[in-house]
Image (tube, rainbow, N blue to C red; front, side, top):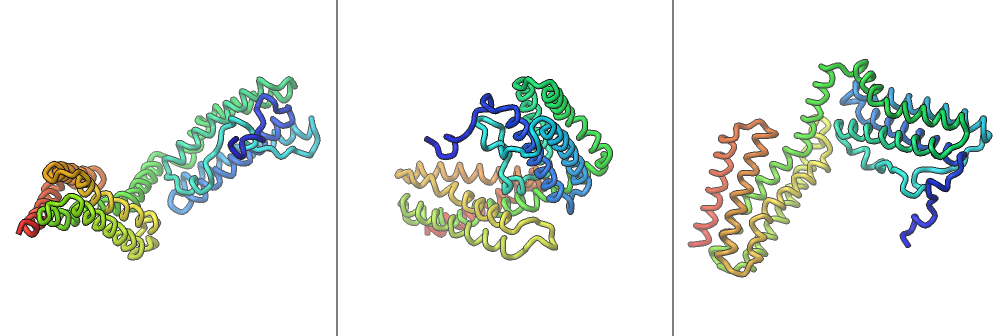
Length: 325
């Protein structure tokens, strides 16, 4: 039996008091999540932070209404029951995942939260027999369903077209600086710089196993070096390039991927088959780099392709000539 699941209650087995308690704790959790979103966004996206502040205040209002109803029906002692105590109940992302969400993902997550809350209130209303409780739960379901409209009103009040466009542009810029730029640098380094040692070894030995080991060592070593270099040389405070840890991972992993792409074919024992496949992989890698430069860095595609393909061809030629000699 899976630990933690054996003691969960089925929703259909909850009493009306437990349903109210669950609704109270859920509203409290959602308000805290919106406040966390607001705090995460306040320095870079203050207008969006105000929208989430308003949504948190809405959840506070729902919680207050639920508590008043609980006092009226069951007294002041509210049972401790949360989402994780109920089998099949909708869950929220852990806080460490929430903190790493981007602006647009936060907005999408908020819409998903409102939809799941609406479904909960409709199910809860259908399960209760008390008229006041049923009426309140139905009203809350309608309120959650109308939160998209409410969010739109809040956005209209705090987030006009110009502000939203500016925040979206800032979010895109941060994504490019934190993930795309270091990842692209790593992919270029891994794809191009490892060409010479891998193909020099290949043509010098014509031994696929040795070539693979050299390629593996070069790729992993380059990935570690690029990752630490990216993380250490800029803490992101002044440059605004984001977390050095994120940039280090992006750069290191993509460097390793770039090198392994044309090292892995040498797991094939036939030398020329492995080499032809490796060359095809190199071609794909170089065009992928040109595409990323064009899409995210706004480099004209033909210029990016010419630069990358020319550079890769020169490095490959150097490795092949040295190995062949």
